Image (cartoon, rainbow, N blue to C red; front, side):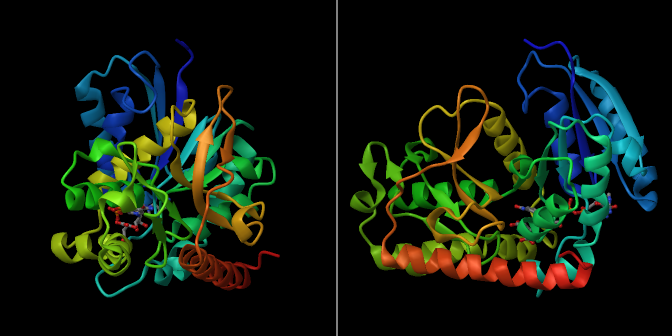
Length: 330
Ligand code: NAD
Ligand code: LMR
């Protein structure tokens, strides 16, 4: 047990994801039941009243692990000495929009936040970007944070992985815990590729249990890719509780050694599997006993999978071009 609190900065803390996330961090679900945490809650000025209310509710839970709550709209204060920065705050899309349509609105937020993390967070700070389009926003933050190594920047595709696991479990009629080794590759966008070929059900290859390849290609893959849109249409608001759950899963699994299998995380590419270098793209990740992550090597990809992954990465390269032009990043 480590008695020094882990300091977690959360932007957009008074928003929908924030409301589903903070209580899980404070209760110990992210870092374990013995690890104290301090929360630095960051909002824009119009969100500060709501943030006060959320803080009152956190107080009213009397969480034994929660040692301190900082409420601020000042980025220097908000990111000061933080160990983790969870970048949620940004505008969600509405029905009829793609996530990439948010780039012009949200992208600039991540310049200032990247700079503030670089200047005020611990040099070991790890950053998880949730706000959409999360891959490219993460890339913007990373390129704005010279003091933080690129390997400490992540964007979230764990929600897509979790969605995929449940779709496959329901199709196969097995508990979701039976489905494993499902990597979502590429962009958190409809072009993402949930790689059913390498997934397993129990000890078997998934494709020897679910043998209907046309269902896998033509129903499963688009269902996962369009799940965020389906939720917005049904709920009138974008996913929040499941997104917060995926944040908890992502951070917990980056903070602990991987026990079997791997998980999907968007990380900076060093050219693995033909991915253009420098992009933030989703790949299968494991974490070793001393906390270093690596991309799983030797995953066998057929032509269909390679084509899907290349298309998603081409989309990311295009997003990078647009974002860097808009923001003057070289
Ligand atoms: P929301 O509108 O409910 O809350 C966003 C909050 O962020 C608001 O309280 C707002 O005041 C605050 N905010 C806006 N700009 C800010 C800034 N510059 N600094 C600090 N706070 C700021 O939205 P939400 O439902 O919580 O979603 C947040 C983001 O997460 C959206 O971009 C959404 O698309 C994205 N998202 C990503 C995933 C994923 O899997 N990667 C899943 C769900 C949602
Ligand atoms: C999701 O996948 O639910 C989020 O990225 C929200 C969205 O806009 O789809």
